[in-house]
Length: 276
Image 1 (cartoon, rainbow, N blue to C red):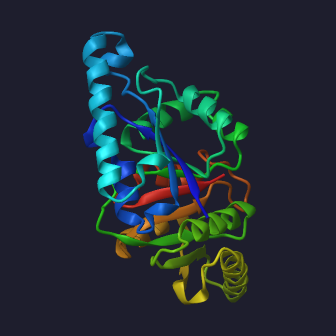
Image 2 (cartoon, rainbow, N blue to C red):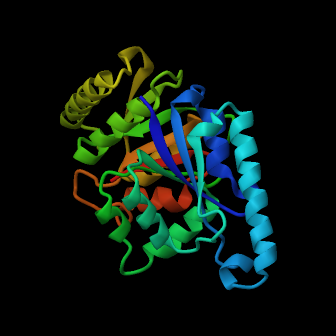
């Protein structure tokens, strides 16, 4: 099944973290329909309104470099679009407008896009984007290690984590990456039984998306502080992706819940996938 992804792209090719991750992590390039949405950094000439000619030249060069990078790595040029390449986008609200105009499977942000998102989450309207588009997963690529593989999928029995399990399985169709289901618990027999039930449910969901049990591992990890436990396991296991539900079984929201906020600010080397 085709996957339609929206990328925020910087005017600086050195910041193409999201594109480089896509090129390296996925082998089956024919499955992707890509839209590149240009976003300048807040301190750039484009956003400040200074040096328009230089800014336009930077955008053209960045657009051309992005297209070369994707095509060189096997993506079909007729499935790549660049939007607003001639007019610079500096506002997070423009992402919301684009998400409203098309149906996307995920929003992918590199380092510059993450900087804008960080600013956005400090505002009173921080939930507006995600309340308007409650089903859009985020793929956040701050400083990915391109040599990593596999996915650490953190599950807690919530609807959000089950949605992420479905998303992970659908994204890995035709790929060779393995998935580790991780449940952070207090180490009691009752909690372990709950973990096994959660794993069975997630395997059932992923199986419907074509991800067989031979590609799924289980990890029950005792800890009183889930955010640090996830970060440590991502580091020790050298996972390429850490995938979490944005709303936990305790009802915490995407950015104000302790797990996702901690990972949003602290996770490096691995790409963070969040499902609302």
